[in-house]
Image (cartoon, one colour):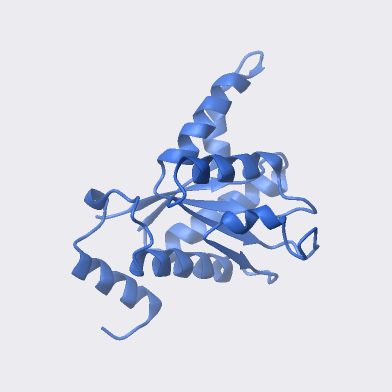
Length: 181
């Protein structure tokens, strides 16, 4: 089965943030019928726990590798000001290769400097604003944006070996989006 990896960039400091990441990842996997494999930041962080606390140096290096290596990135842009680590991950990914895909999602209705998020976050390929309360609906919007990006050929950096042949990919995406063949 074909699949693409999606790394989540986002805060994970509170139980609410970790639970949101987990619920969103599960909903994305379900909505994409397993086509999108979501990598959770809290699961990645677990690898660096030691008896004396977190190994921050190793975590930092690992996060930079993750920012660059995954097929797609989903950045959580909530908060009065977007999490600084999230901003660094976005900037690092785009700085290494502007063609790498980053989709932002904002569920926080508070505004900041540019009315929504910091103006520099326009570097994201797309920013989804969702102020509802249904995680499945939000996941559907995210999956649809990723699939539209893939369908329209913006994902030049995705390894072609992980994608089905173009005609099959187009059929899969169009079926997901509910479009006629």
